[in-house]
Image (tube, rainbow, N blue to C red):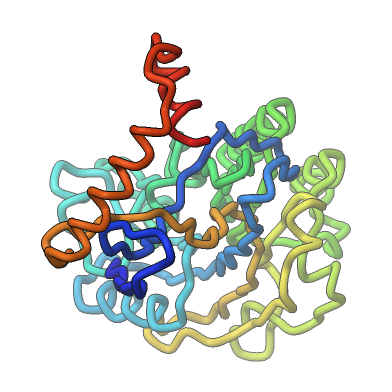
Length: 341
């Protein structure tokens, strides 16, 4: 940062010319507690993180995948749960997913899957590069679930889970729900916020699915809330012909849901899917240092001091020395005391 110098006119004391220069310096270690500011040098800054979930019905084709990533980025979505990716695990899969918009973390099906219904699984979390630095841990499960732990500023630790509950595979449906429940409970035990989003292929209003779909009860028991239920939104997220339903959703901890914006349900044209995207924003608090006022200090401009000023300065120094009681000066402390009389 450029700091501008300003010259002072000659004062009543004949000293070399000076200018004032600002320089801020922190004098003590700043202590920050969770959501408590104990130092006035800090100020709260709110980071808004846009999250969404969308069933893309396949990103295994290169051009479609690029269009989807670009469209999601253009909508400025920071974290996206992408379900039904139809990606099979293979050596070069992660290389194929490299792009300029998102870091892609996947839970893919195994390559030897031959059953079409199984091959249509797969989930992923897309994370914008500027928040990728907050990632602490990642785990995946059988092509149906993945979580990422984010350690945001101010001890705001959040677990984001993407889930796809398939249809027809009873054992896999049960296993996936058990695993997601385990992840939710472990996050709660560590006092983390939790966000679960994806395609559940069901909802809380389907009473016939209660015994099979216990994931909703598990989330409610762990104080997670559906953002669509909370805002009383009845729009469909899936439609095929005359049939429509609300099977895509975002569930989250109370501490998160109280910071959300009104959720939006929107088409994502590039997916060519019969699902619509559910999107909202959450707030994360960050601390930033306040800019302190410049402190003035005296700088001697020796090169710009004229001969006459040096002569006057010399006389003043000589006069001060003559007034000193030299014999009483025995150390630096007594010297400074005598000099500043």
